[in-house]
Image 1 (cartoon, rainbow, N blue to C red):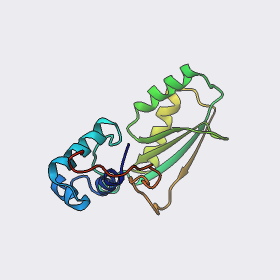
Image 2 (image 1 turned 135 degrees about the vertical axis):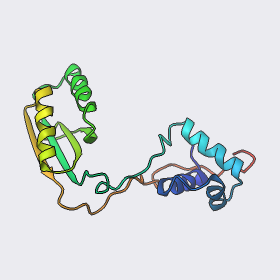
Image 3 (image 1 turned 135 degrees about the horizontal axis):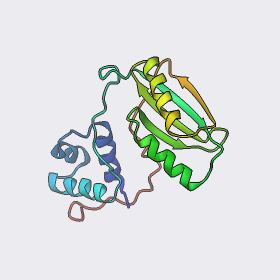
Image 4 (image 1 turned 120 degrees about the vertical axis):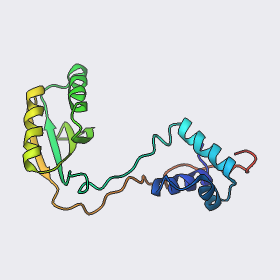
Length: 164
Protein backbone atom coordinates (compact mmCIF):
# COMPACT_ATOMS: atom_id res chain seq x y z
CA UNK A 1 0.00 0.00 0.00
CA UNK A 2 1.14 3.53 -0.73
CA UNK A 3 1.92 5.73 2.27
CA UNK A 4 2.23 9.52 2.57
CA UNK A 5 5.95 9.43 1.70
CA UNK A 6 5.28 7.42 -1.47
CA UNK A 7 2.56 9.92 -2.39
CA UNK A 8 5.02 12.81 -1.96
CA UNK A 9 7.61 10.96 -4.05
CA UNK A 10 5.01 10.45 -6.79
CA UNK A 11 4.03 14.10 -6.67
CA UNK A 12 7.65 15.19 -7.11
CA UNK A 13 8.30 12.74 -9.94
CA UNK A 14 5.10 13.71 -11.77
CA UNK A 15 6.27 17.30 -11.75
CA UNK A 16 9.83 16.48 -12.91
CA UNK A 17 11.16 12.93 -13.12
CA UNK A 18 14.70 14.18 -13.81
CA UNK A 19 15.19 15.39 -10.24
CA UNK A 20 18.06 13.36 -8.72
CA UNK A 21 17.01 10.66 -6.24
CA UNK A 22 19.09 12.34 -3.52
CA UNK A 23 17.04 15.54 -3.96
CA UNK A 24 13.75 13.62 -3.98
CA UNK A 25 14.87 11.90 -0.79
CA UNK A 26 15.82 15.21 0.81
CA UNK A 27 12.39 16.64 0.00
CA UNK A 28 10.56 13.69 1.56
CA UNK A 29 12.90 13.19 4.51
CA UNK A 30 14.71 10.03 3.37
CA UNK A 31 18.30 9.25 2.53
CA UNK A 32 19.10 8.30 -1.06
CA UNK A 33 19.05 4.49 -0.79
CA UNK A 34 15.63 4.12 0.91
CA UNK A 35 14.18 6.69 -1.48
CA UNK A 36 15.57 4.78 -4.48
CA UNK A 37 14.13 1.51 -3.08
CA UNK A 38 10.71 3.13 -2.82
CA UNK A 39 10.90 4.42 -6.40
CA UNK A 40 11.96 0.97 -7.62
CA UNK A 41 9.05 -0.63 -5.73
CA UNK A 42 6.61 1.88 -7.24
CA UNK A 43 7.97 0.93 -10.68
CA UNK A 44 7.83 -2.82 -9.96
CA UNK A 45 4.24 -2.47 -8.73
CA UNK A 46 3.29 -0.63 -11.93
CA UNK A 47 2.38 2.60 -10.14
CA UNK A 48 5.10 4.32 -12.17
CA UNK A 49 4.56 3.01 -15.69
CA UNK A 50 7.40 4.88 -17.40
CA UNK A 51 9.33 8.14 -17.36
CA UNK A 52 8.99 10.36 -20.39
CA UNK A 53 9.78 13.80 -21.76
CA UNK A 54 6.78 16.05 -22.45
CA UNK A 55 7.35 17.76 -25.79
CA UNK A 56 6.08 21.12 -27.00
CA UNK A 57 3.71 20.29 -29.90
CA UNK A 58 4.58 23.51 -31.75
CA UNK A 59 8.32 22.76 -31.63
CA UNK A 60 7.75 19.32 -33.19
CA UNK A 61 5.24 20.63 -35.76
CA UNK A 62 2.04 19.03 -34.48
CA UNK A 63 0.19 22.16 -33.45
CA UNK A 64 -3.33 21.00 -34.46
CA UNK A 65 -5.26 18.81 -32.00
CA UNK A 66 -8.32 17.00 -33.30
CA UNK A 67 -10.85 15.13 -31.19
CA UNK A 68 -12.35 12.42 -33.37
CA UNK A 69 -15.66 10.88 -32.24
CA UNK A 70 -16.36 7.56 -33.91
CA UNK A 71 -19.53 5.49 -33.95
CA UNK A 72 -19.85 2.04 -35.38
CA UNK A 73 -22.60 -0.49 -35.88
CA UNK A 74 -20.15 -3.28 -34.96
CA UNK A 75 -19.82 -4.00 -31.25
CA UNK A 76 -17.99 -7.29 -30.99
CA UNK A 77 -14.57 -8.22 -29.67
CA UNK A 78 -13.17 -9.14 -33.08
CA UNK A 79 -14.04 -5.73 -34.56
CA UNK A 80 -12.63 -3.92 -31.52
CA UNK A 81 -9.35 -5.87 -31.75
CA UNK A 82 -9.10 -5.08 -35.47
CA UNK A 83 -9.91 -1.42 -34.85
CA UNK A 84 -7.33 -1.22 -32.04
CA UNK A 85 -4.73 -2.81 -34.35
CA UNK A 86 -5.55 -0.28 -37.08
CA UNK A 87 -5.35 2.65 -34.66
CA UNK A 88 -1.97 1.42 -33.35
CA UNK A 89 -0.57 1.97 -36.87
CA UNK A 90 -1.27 5.72 -36.67
CA UNK A 91 1.34 7.70 -34.71
CA UNK A 92 -0.95 10.75 -35.01
CA UNK A 93 -3.36 9.11 -32.53
CA UNK A 94 -2.02 10.02 -29.11
CA UNK A 95 -5.06 8.89 -27.09
CA UNK A 96 -7.72 6.27 -27.84
CA UNK A 97 -10.79 5.57 -25.68
CA UNK A 98 -13.82 3.28 -25.78
CA UNK A 99 -16.70 5.44 -24.59
CA UNK A 100 -20.14 5.18 -23.00
CA UNK A 101 -22.94 7.27 -24.49
CA UNK A 102 -23.63 8.44 -28.04
CA UNK A 103 -20.02 8.05 -29.21
CA UNK A 104 -18.39 4.60 -29.29
CA UNK A 105 -14.74 5.67 -29.51
CA UNK A 106 -12.84 8.92 -29.04
CA UNK A 107 -9.42 9.67 -30.48
CA UNK A 108 -7.11 12.57 -29.75
CA UNK A 109 -5.05 13.21 -32.85
CA UNK A 110 -2.04 15.52 -33.23
CA UNK A 111 -1.14 16.77 -36.72
CA UNK A 112 0.65 19.77 -38.26
CA UNK A 113 -2.40 21.20 -40.06
CA UNK A 114 -5.88 20.49 -41.46
CA UNK A 115 -4.44 18.98 -44.64
CA UNK A 116 -2.49 16.45 -42.57
CA UNK A 117 -5.67 15.65 -40.64
CA UNK A 118 -7.53 15.08 -43.91
CA UNK A 119 -4.79 12.67 -45.05
CA UNK A 120 -5.02 10.85 -41.70
CA UNK A 121 -8.81 10.63 -42.02
CA UNK A 122 -8.62 9.19 -45.54
CA UNK A 123 -6.06 6.57 -44.45
CA UNK A 124 -8.22 5.65 -41.45
CA UNK A 125 -11.48 5.13 -43.36
CA UNK A 126 -9.64 3.12 -46.03
CA UNK A 127 -8.50 0.63 -43.36
CA UNK A 128 -11.71 -0.02 -41.40
CA UNK A 129 -15.47 0.35 -41.78
CA UNK A 130 -16.84 3.11 -39.52
CA UNK A 131 -20.48 4.24 -39.33
CA UNK A 132 -19.83 7.88 -38.48
CA UNK A 133 -16.88 10.16 -37.79
CA UNK A 134 -17.24 13.60 -36.26
CA UNK A 135 -14.16 15.73 -35.68
CA UNK A 136 -13.71 18.82 -33.51
CA UNK A 137 -10.55 20.89 -33.64
CA UNK A 138 -9.14 22.53 -30.53
CA UNK A 139 -8.89 26.29 -30.91
CA UNK A 140 -6.80 26.79 -27.76
CA UNK A 141 -5.40 24.50 -25.09
CA UNK A 142 -6.33 25.99 -21.75
CA UNK A 143 -5.06 23.26 -19.43
CA UNK A 144 -2.87 20.26 -20.06
CA UNK A 145 -1.12 18.14 -17.48
CA UNK A 146 0.28 14.67 -17.20
CA UNK A 147 0.02 14.86 -13.40
CA UNK A 148 -2.68 12.61 -11.96
CA UNK A 149 -4.48 13.70 -8.78
CA UNK A 150 -2.98 11.79 -5.86
CA UNK A 151 -5.48 12.80 -3.16
CA UNK A 152 -7.59 9.71 -3.89
CA UNK A 153 -4.87 7.19 -3.00
CA UNK A 154 -5.69 5.49 0.30
CA UNK A 155 -2.68 5.94 2.56
CA UNK A 156 -1.21 4.06 5.44
CA UNK A 157 1.12 5.23 8.17
CA UNK A 158 4.60 5.99 6.69
CA UNK A 159 7.20 3.26 7.07
CA UNK A 160 10.40 4.05 8.92
CA UNK A 161 13.57 4.58 6.88
CA UNK A 162 14.72 1.10 7.91
CA UNK A 163 11.47 -0.45 6.57
CA UNK A 164 11.80 1.46 3.28
